[in-house]
Image (cartoon, rainbow, N blue to C red; front, side):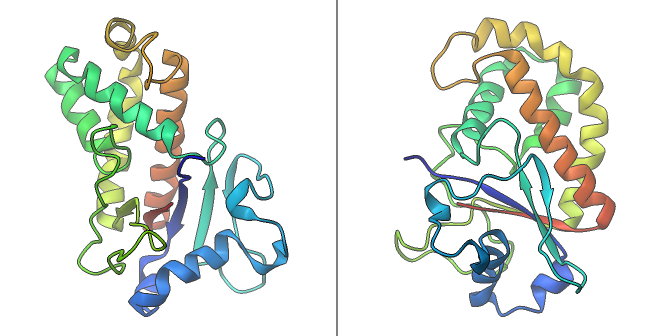
Length: 208
């Protein structure tokens, strides 16, 4: 079974008030609360509908989990999308290439980057020390999210310009999205994620 990816939108002020060593555990409590009982959430778990999921309760929520429509929680589709972008990048004009780099940088990684730990943002999370405590996959501070939201506004109108390069470099190749439509659908979901997080002034975290 491959690695999963759980993406959180997080109020950075609230996260900063939690001791560093406890932050991953607190996020995991939100993603996989005790109410699931004996269900093994790490082995498929209860299915979530597409979109944002907020913890129950009366207190104001400080984070939410995003469920991607087509990935069923798996990390590999994001890696495939990163590999596709790495493949088609040389064929894309400089203006689109630069804004795509700004949008995707740190959000998704190619196969060559997949095993590289995410930067922990100056001690936002503890470093992994063994295979039972895997590295955080994504850390995007609120100011970085705001920049990605601005980049997405410029990227979205240009997505169709990627179809030709995708057909040349990615279509039919293993380790790439199955179709250009799949590739664009995942980019649009990431666009929705950064847009909502930027609207709230929150950051993003991705856990395996």
